[in-house]
Length: 124
Image (cartoon, rainbow, N blue to C red):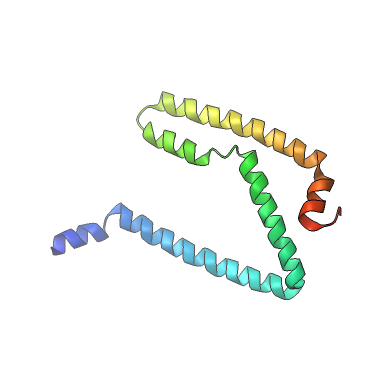
């Protein structure tokens, strides 16, 4: 029983879970501190605008990447022994991301006034 417990504790899964947990706690502490500082300096309305900006950036970042990150991870891990298949998936992902990034950039540039009005109630 003790040997099984020791081998479980030493397993990669437990190590990865531990480091992931530590990273999550650190990230949460930093976000809490940043949010507190931001709330003090810009106030509630400024804090709301920053939230709107973050949400807008997240939407555009997801669209620009083609929303394919999970699929790429899945297929690259499925073909971890077959480098030719991995290259096919990675090359396709790069092409999709490039096209989506260019299109998203053009849309943001062309409709920047509308986007600013929608997100911030201001064209500035």
